[in-house]
Length: 316
Image (cartoon, rainbow, N blue to C red; front, side):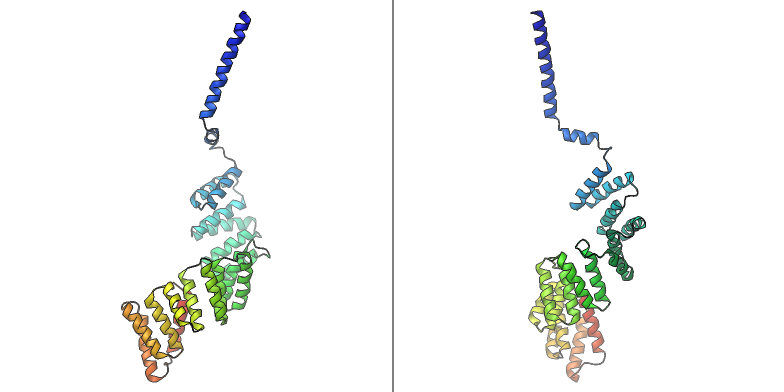
């Protein structure tokens, strides 16, 4: 009897102990406790994985911090150099981004992501020759590096080879069919080739894809002017800036068509809407009146208008 009583007491105590442990487990977030316990002992893989998560959420500062901690564990890791370079590029810190990509290039010069990063930085700082060299190294037949094709297309347009630009933009579009920047740039290639209807279609597709930058509307306005859809062009120019500039731009189009009366009316309207707008509208009005009086523009006219067109092409 005494032995039985002892067994019951031990069992009761054991049961109480189990009950107490169960209560503690239920009241503690074990995952949080483990994370807190191991916060200074995270593995390289864990830090990189967390950094990737924050980068995908556009929390670039936190992602950079985690990548930096991981890099302390593996200082020679090229993937982390590229990822840090990508973040710095997105933050527009070009010098620092360049340093990261160059560090990666020293270890693996043939990597496409390294060359793409270098090409993007050099393009951003307007060193087109170096950008061209690196972007060519980043090109591939697949879709992994379509950005290289898109940027090379711009460089070819700027070099006066819009046919090659068109080819590269179409290649990039196969990989990113709804990218509004590609569609705008393809439209620019068409515009430079004199294929104005195709340009209009491409600019409209860019806007439909969500690219509503002022430059796109400006380009659309230029293409519509070339197809003589002046009212639609006026609306596009309004979206790019304001009504006064739209009247000035349409006046410019009429001036080029030697329809000086309409040009004068547009320039006067631009000045009425915004008297202190910019000296250009006033100068344009003087030229249009002089051209109407003499039935032809003076020799200085074309250079001024060509310059104006370039400003429009560059957008705001």
